[in-house]
Length: 201
Image 1 (cartoon, rainbow, N blue to C red):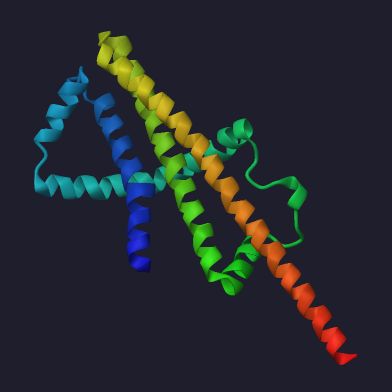
Image 2 (cartoon, helix red, strand yellow):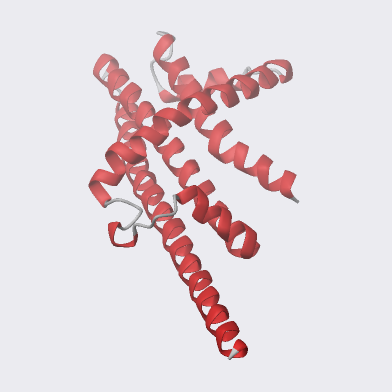
């Protein structure tokens, strides 16, 4: 089951953004691609062996671009829609230690924390790739004045912004659930300590 979750994460967080970026690079580097339909015709000629190579390259590009997607999330998304971790809940424990506590004492909640992080990574990586498509589409529109590039550019821009916002939301949900679980664990520990003290008396 863990392998299924991991492979699903790879597909949506790395392969999908990587394939979008690879497509944008092909459009930008190939002067013969003057319309969106022209790019679609190139895809029809892809063989099985070439598809395997494309999958591997897309996965590698997706892993590399994760750094840019993460930068986009924290430097842009969090500035616009707010920091994911509320300052009012700063703790002496680092975030890593808080996650470790949740993982040890509440595996079900920890699984949910991982889900939010997966969705966050997927969203900001795809957002970055779509913003790259936006840039390439607008360049092609300026070169060829083709309406399909303008439509693609606007659609990619809107989708990229929405996904960047979703990344911030997923990150906030991640920290919100982690904080709540830490507070519950602290309360349980306090109650347990008081119960032991009363028992000794």
